[in-house]
Image (cartoon, rainbow, N blue to C red; front, side, top):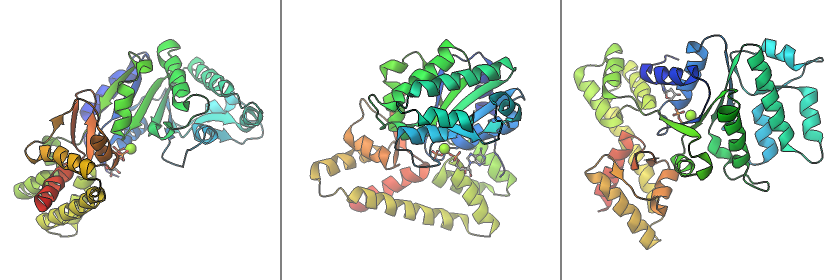
Length: 344
Ligand SMILES: Nc1ncnc2c1ncn2[C@@H]1O[C@H](COP(=O)(O)OP(=O)(O)OP(=O)(O)O)[C@@H](O)[C@H]1O
Ligand SMILES: [Mg+2]
């Protein structure tokens, strides 16, 4: 896959990583803005050799129980003599879990009391060993919100946050990044007392106009086609790539864009009209959306049920730091307008 310009983001993230760990970094942004791809590219192509990254993708499998979270958190090494030291010497640049010898994993999880503190102690010990060997570990959780509803006695996520705060602010053992595309989750985190002063936020948004123009020009788009793509798709990476593919097979760009808009409008319309019977709620949704008839983004004071509904359905995106909401993409903005036009 060809990777397009993210120079600014890469520089910003590198600057964070080069400092001593201090805060948990939440990477957020609208859906499909390229958060995951950016982090993977950074690890695999940019980070100096001494860094090892543990990329924990919680979207990979269904996680509904504490045990399932640990199964994803660890990468089990089944060598006969799998001592941690030896495993560490085998670590690739990007590993999909924290390495653990099979025997240790088994022991930890066969304990009847399932004492999670053992798990966290093991993680701390492993990271300390890595550090002693001159390596610099980084832990990345992709889609951390997946565990937000898992409860044991207290919510699992609080335990995880406590661990992450220890690893960064207190022990300075590793950098921690948590990527999420769920902006209601980010909103909750942002207002979470436990995390005040212990984390920071980094927005990965769609490409800007200049970047889109540069990418498309290199792919042989003329001025008119560039304007069309920008008008319909803004800087959404996935849509830009699709448009390039369509041009390559000789499709008319305007026609293709119109088709995508129609599809998106139909989908949004279906989602919203499902709530038509709940008169009050439906009207509040419509009046919220009407704000986008003349604006690309709007300010909010608090997250209402209608905002929540539209965010959950990937129509709107919330930025809790700047207190604004906007459609997830330019196509969504146009689709909302076209939907309103149709029903009003
Ligand atoms: N810098 C880039 N260069 C090339 N392609 C990109 C880039 N960023 C994103 N893409 C394309 O967009 C797609 C979506 O990117 P990615 O999965 O990283 O988005 P995301 O923000 O993590 O999405 P989600 O919100 O669903 O987690 C990628 O599969 C890739 O095709
Ligand atoms: Mg992602």
